[in-house]
Image (cartoon, rainbow, N blue to C red; front, top):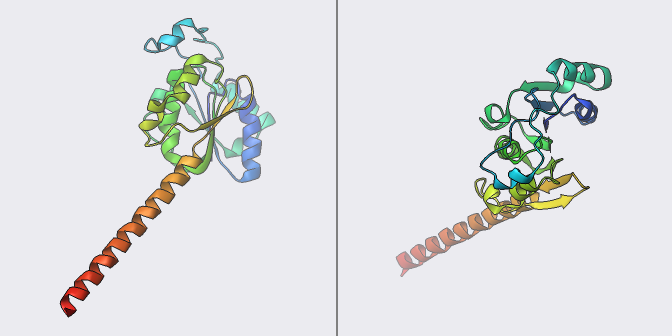
Length: 203
């Protein structure tokens, strides 16, 4: 499955849907359909950023028309509403392979992460189209953002002025190997303890 968070009029959605059809994926599209939400007053750095509030508003009907005309509407599901009432409420109910975030703000990005990271595949990738925005960049590079998910700061690869890829698989791999090592150590300890008990009984 792929998640797109912020779709405007569906130009990117149509392209993603064609890719998903080829791969046998579903595409879940999230958008308020009311434009960019007001800036987060709690994020100090946003005071000096351009205010996108209300921009990039398009109706879900426009999105549906563009999916029908240019994309693969049959693989898509549309989830209207602010991210705080959709993605931030509960994890996406399926394994997520790719995420594309284009919401022009740190608050929305944080809410998307709440919904997708618990469902992200081990080798899943999160793309941010907003990495040129200082508050978004700070959020993604801040260790506290990832601590709540039990992860370290992921590897972030800048792919252009606006676009960056966030890859968490290295940390997932490390965690799996660490857990396996702990299981082996515990089992070895249990075997040694059993051997000592047998030896003590024979003595």
